[in-house]
Image 1 (cartoon, rainbow, N blue to C red):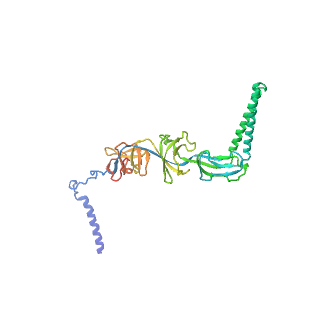
Image 2: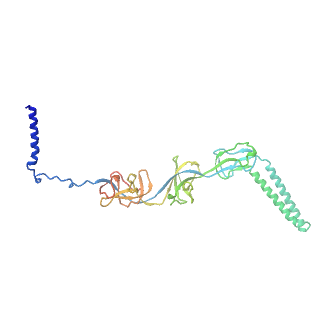
Length: 365
């Protein structure tokens, strides 16, 4: 027999004897072994969260809305009579006062019509005075007195109409403002001038800041309240609310709010984008980091808090004012421990280890 075959048979026999020894040799008693606990005797480590202790204070709320500036008054000045435009006293950007001449139209016999009407009035008045004595003496019937008085009043009315027509030849500013546009040139024909738009006049003092407020945010906004306005150019102004609409827009369901701003130097232009901050009544609120907000399993927005027994709870909140990194919210009890780190990794009812946040603080302004 070859040596390799003898070696193989020996290995098989040795393996068989080793397996058989497990059945026939005595086992170690359970008392001789070291007892290994199944692992349940080691306490489970609690999840650690960072908390802050909140402070509820009366917070002066502020409603910030985007809008635009708008001229207080705007009118298109038109010619109310015929004639050739002979003089144009203004150009774009001209500041005018009430009553200043904007344009002059050709006379077109209007002065002559006034003179004719004046002569007729003088004639009728003279006739009336001359015949009044005759009527008193009975030489002329008393009925003629009524006719003469009617003729005089008719002549006076014709004179007033002629004088009004003459005054229409000079176009004046109805109130103080700035000429924004001029749509005519000197020498335009008479037949096209009656009713023609001559210039656009706007009043820049005061200037209005106009915003549209949603119906849910309308409460607390009152006429006479102060408001701060910041223009897109970086300039700021302070004014008062002068109008709060009582009827909503049919398309947007918002309410128009007008803030009157002093603008004697005309630095605030018409139609520029503006941000209006309207102060509202103070309300109890808590200032927390924006990152502390989370959602419950039901989809409500709020914060997770740690109770007295270190158990996680959820508190729904309502946002009062939104800042860049912090938010003022209502609904959190004073002195509550709000989770600001780790709130998204725990659930309501879970016991946690709460530690004070070292870097995140929430203090009232």
